[in-house]
Image (cartoon, rainbow, N blue to C red):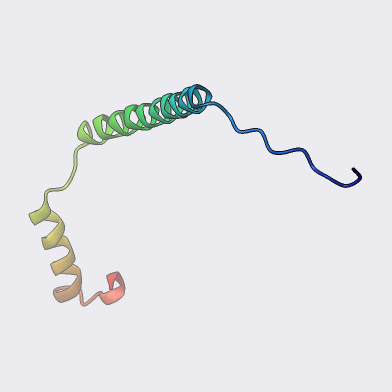
Length: 73
């Protein structure tokens, strides 16, 4: 028989479950690493002296009204 292809071989259920478990574990490691990175960045931001919302609003208000500086918009 010329030109016939052998039937495809399907993986077993156990092989599929194993592969899915490995993929899940890999994704979990990636997500946990990203979460740790975000937590580190958040801790760095929390240690900074930051402007409160009212200070930020007043700075914008002054630029728009007192100094007539509309470049912020």
